[in-house]
Image (cartoon, rainbow, N blue to C red; front, side, top):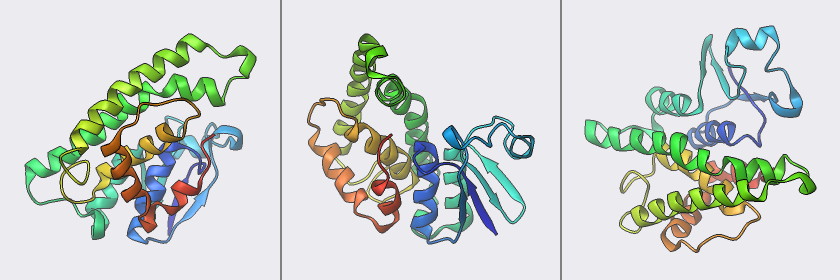
Length: 206
């Protein structure tokens, strides 16, 4: 039995949904987090002491942290997400997973939260502008990187594309003006057309 805890509009849950769908693995998703609550219940905290989503349960094995789950799926189930045998190629994937988690997604946090979680009259315009500026710098980095290759970590689709792709999906659909990034847009259109991405792409940004 495979069970995924987390609301479908959470960007971190979306990474795992994409990974599971990419591998065509059967699973049950249970709403948790945000308006659904549950994450502070004792039973859930026994699974995930951080009280966050996602949490994956698989035949008695429990794992949390979205990028750790992506790595596990790639290592345990392989398929189109199989990690390369070369240590340097694997390190390149890990590098971009960390970049997404520590740079790209945190940069857009204020812009996202102020836009979707704060009433319009109470929004902090300065915080939004600063967040957009920070994210543009990272979008420029990604665009320059993708100008010379097909996917985030090289010439093959990987879990790095899933993690960065979910962040890019949010960035490209925020209701704010952005600088046009041709390579980023080309790459995003390609990965968004994958069947495994369908569930994530269909979910509204909110």
